Amino acid sequence: MVPLLLVALLVLILFGAGFAVKVLWWIALAVLALWLVGFLVRGVGPSGGRSRWYRW
Image (cartoon, rainbow, N blue to C red; front, side, top):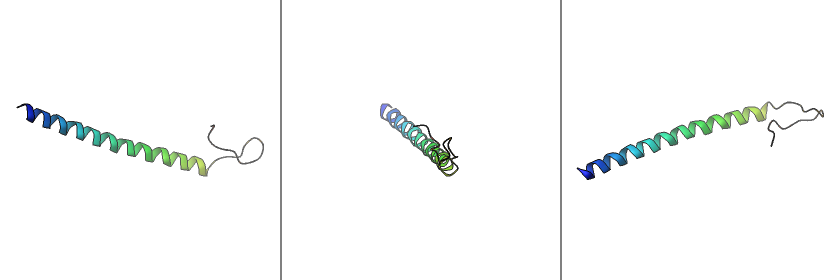
């Protein structure tokens, strides 16, 4: 009975980790897309030149 419970627990942990990794990939792709859009459409700065769209 104990080995069956351990295997079931291992399956649940691996399924959860796989789902979390998939969600993190989608979040990373969304952030990359936002960064690319911001990089491509950055505006003109106050000094008249091209400015960085990020603050750091």
